[in-house]
Amino acid sequence: MCGIIGIISQSNVSIRLLEGLKRLEYRGYDSAGIATITDGGIDRRRAEGKLEKLIDVVNDHPLEGHIGIGHTRWATHGGVTKSNAHPMANETVAVVHNGIIENFASLKENLIKRGAVFTSDTDTEVVMHIVTFHMQEGLTPFKAVQKALSQIKGAFALAFLFKNHDNMLIAARRGSPLVLGMTESELFIGSDAIALASWVKTLCYLEEGDIATLTLNDTTPEIIISDADGEIVQRPLRQTNITVDAISKGAFTHYMLKEIFEQPLTISDTLQSLISIEDESFHSPLLALNKPFSKIRIIACGTSYYAGMVAKYWFEKLAHIHVDVEIASEFRYRTPVFDGQTLNLFITQSGETIDTMAALTLVKQNNETCLSIVNVSESSIARASDFVIHTMAGPEIGVASTKAFTAQLVVLAAICLKFAKERCTISETEWTQYFQSFAKLPGCISELLRNDGIYHQLATHLCQVHHALYLGRGVNFPIALEGALKLKEISYIHAEGYPAGELKHGPIALIDPKMPVIVLAPHDEWFEKTLSNVQEVLARGAKVIIFSDEKGTKQIIEQTKTMKCLEIVTLPESNILTAPILFTLPIQLLAYYTAHMKGTDVDQPRNLAKSVTVE
Ligand code: M6R
Image 1 (cartoon, helix red, strand yellow):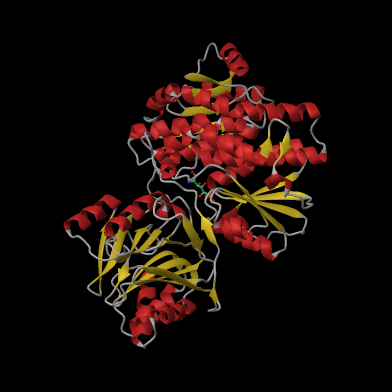
Image 2: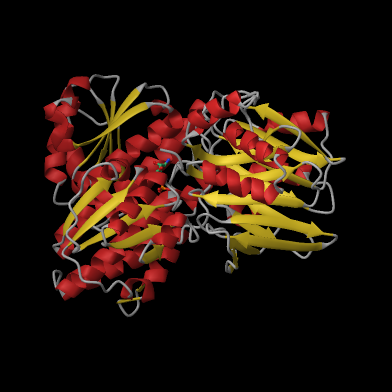
């Protein structure tokens, strides 16, 4: 969601503020703006819609200044208008804000009574007025911000710019992340490390309640951080390995396509970080998982939740562990029973999803162990967990999660094997077979990607429909859900995922010749049952697309001779651990090519944000 950038330099910053905002586009936004100090005063440019509009405004009315802040806004309070776009500014202060000020309504009422005139519908504007009043009372910018923060409730990240202070920015974090960067002569603020890639290598992440003052005295940059108690503190410096290459599209038309094609590598990197295929052993992140537990509770949102659903099948079948899978936004507001014996496993690409974070806080308050699987290593959830396993997917820019999902599955499969080994629930032969299938997996995926023409062809049919149904059983039921989610997220085609056995309990009423049914059916223990369900939908005139393997394809052709499927796509052979990973690729490609043909904004679909930092 919203993105923040701030720069203090000795040269004009407006072009680089826009460049930073460009890198933050992936987070999702609907308006943008920048503000600088020119001749001691605050000047700003804002525009509704895509960044290109703001760039046009800045080209028409250039903005001078060596210090500035910028923002991409994902609307929460107030519609998508220029007047609601950040920075919020008056003559004294300009502010950009990620998150939500929960008590903004009562604060606004009081501020209006004191004479404040509001020009937007945002919650952010209250912060601007409070800081302004405190500065009018004679407080320094830092003290004014500190006092304002003691009055506001909610989760937020803020960056401030002040009149007559052309060498100082203030940044504050509570709930939403903020990162600072420093070179020999410049200072930066970003809502994530991606915003600052190419400018800085050394980063400093603010912690909960921190307020940072960034000052450039002549050519000397300085950062002073006060913690929630007002004490001056040092925060560790981290090196970022995010390169400009890793966050560029390269030769691909979209980030999503690039990220789909990166999967042979990201899967292989994630595997290698956890297991040694040659000697069939585990590496340290898995070995560290040594706390006893009696059951597992997996908590996540969206695509990450579907990864958790797959893991439930794996852990129960292969390691004989009881698993509950919870949607974080529901879990956090239920009254779960904590027994102190449960391993809580949080799955999140961004590590910033607010519901998942709140669920983690609840679990910690109840003294249970928290293990998280995250892609963004310095994220809030990674830092708050007892154990962390990193997915090696690299930065995922496309809003629709692809390579992060398959990397999560790889981590979960490796954890499952570790527990199965410890509990002696799989034989030596199975153990070796699983390791060997892992070794072959990146190659199988590369092969599948080399033959992506078929998905393009299928998309010509799919892009004309208004609804689609995805079916799967067992470990491929969550992949059916993921297939439906991918299609609706980026092509805006209504899609539902169902366990194939549920069809007769309602959804079969939807079947007619206009309803494509996409079936995930490797020749596994659930195959025969799924094939019966295929017969049922074929008999009702549905256009069926089946993904199977060689053995399955033969049987499908034999058994559906009279009622032919629209298409049968044959994938490489798989087993219970590799199938959900492998069968994810077709549903990603199908969604991508369908959306691309429809001409939607694949990387930044409407209304969506990459990391969901508001409830
Ligand atoms: O960053 P997280 O994995 O916690 O995000 C969870 C969901 O918001 C995310 O998976 C969402 O469903 C994606 N847009 C899916 O493509």
